[in-house]
Image (cartoon, rainbow, N blue to C red):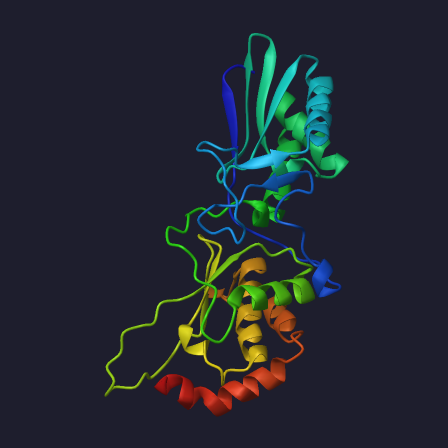
Length: 283
């Protein structure tokens, strides 16, 4: 094949298996890769020079996939591992060398998927293309956000530390695998003589992979378990995509609702919200 071929990422679709909540989702980054944190949002004091790499890759895993490609192509292969948002696979034959750029999700893919990847890159096999495409769909949660967050994150509130609560929920219910960002949102403008009629306590932006929590919850009288429930709800949006049924979009499909009820303080949190909604609206 001459020229360059690109396999784009088609649609974000993550699937979750049944079982213990902490084991239900794959890590967003391959175990053989480490995504470099955005210095703007990192919780650590990390400093990298300009033009730093997007990820650090386990060289042994990269070489293993490179050898598999070379064995199937019967020619030298130069493999680059990427953390691209859109193009998961691209390759070109130049001067007798196959140059491939492959997303890191394939480093720990099952052998059957890696074999299909080879067949697709080397021969353009259609059935292999379908298998590779399904694997990309199933691992859409490993792809970076499509729109960067341009403002610094604010997680330390006057009464609650969002990041600490997020980490606790992440470890308890998701095995520490959710790497969404989180921040207190901006307080909406409202006239003091006109109390709120409704309030959105949390939101999730899929394009930014960002959870925003309404600052009205940063009060000492708001229990930590209720704040944890709001964060848990938005984290579920991060790992369970909306679905389409009967011609309409379902933000809370049955899988979402069943997972939401796994929150240990689910009934308690809903009861607290019902009894304090007036106070939240007035705050």
